[in-house]
Amino acid sequence: AFIDLQVIASNSAAGKAASTKLDELTKKKSAEIGEKNKQLQALTTKRDTSLGVMNDTARAQLDKDIDKLQRDIQFSNSNAQAEVNEMQNELQGEFQKRLIPIIEELAKEKGLYLIFTAESGFAYVHPGLNLSDEVIKRLDAKK
Image (cartoon, rainbow, N blue to C red; front, side, top):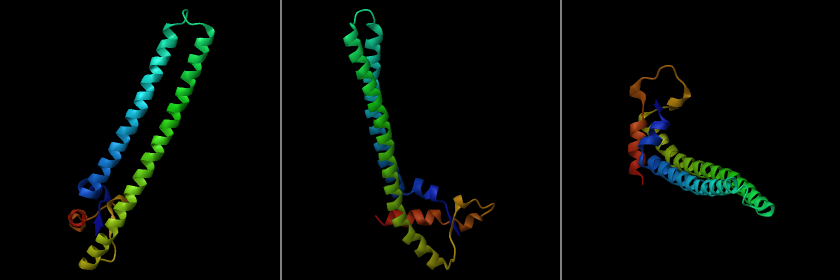
């Protein structure tokens, strides 16, 4: 038999909850970085529009502020990506911990020796062997 992990992750309550958590973190981090980009844009505009008005010291300070903010944005991007990756790994680990016993239970019940994943790249798999819907039902039932 086989299961489609993507279908299980997309259609089960646990998979949907994990996706929502990941989306919320991604949106939060994007908003934080977006705010810093707005600040950078404001500083850059201020520098560019006050070319003849600003003295050299003020302009040098503004250039330093812009450079610092650019580095801060790069650091924030790297940090955000690391946080998202870490959460994704944690959520996948938790999901697998819940999923494996269900798959083992199904294999015993149906007398199966192997359960493949649809992602393994088989040329043909009879649709009747797909246990994904059964895994979703059982995963959702075990809150």
